[in-house]
Image 1 (spheres, rainbow, N blue to C red):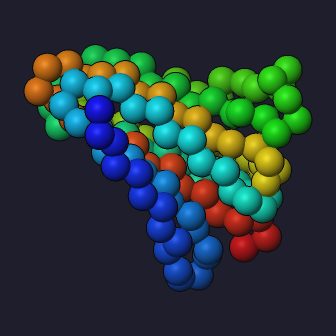
Image 2: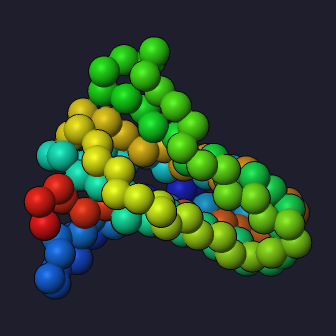
Length: 123
């Protein structure tokens, strides 16, 4: 399974790190990103090439150890192509923490893409 992973630094008023991955047809995606420094989660976006009914999970992989790992959000798609989660409140993470997004396979002939947007703390 060939999965393309890209990391871009987007300049502007904020310093944003974007991590995104595109899947091949009928493949699940797991995208993990670390801030490298303290960061906040700006948003998570998911797109499939066709309508799907799946649950995408957004989980904290804590740098403090497995006992601190936690499910942050489930993005439920019910016959939809796109999903996004923008936290209601600012959530700060340590540079040792990671955000893990798992997007299940959309089915035969369907590709998917996941983008995680982080902002360095203090920006």
